[in-house]
Image (tube, rainbow, N blue to C red; front, side, top):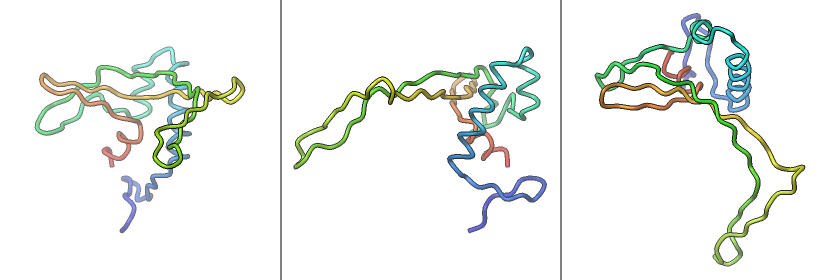
Length: 120
């Protein structure tokens, strides 16, 4: 199966590391931008899209922080879940990014990777 191509003929890969780096760069740029609307235009984030016959409009750029404070794994012999709180130095912070599009009867939440896949 061939990888999708952009309008210049470049193949797109769905490398999770590259996608995460692009998301981090977008979050940093968006937070720093004094003109957020212009930033969206420069980064080719669609202001509207058609899905299932409805015209959806971009309503929100959602950036949220998430902290992983514990780890869990299945217990031995099916004995439920084993939980381990992480020590402070091991707690990981990540920022999540979503784009919320709405129509009169629909709400769609997409990631940056979703938008790039749908655009090409």
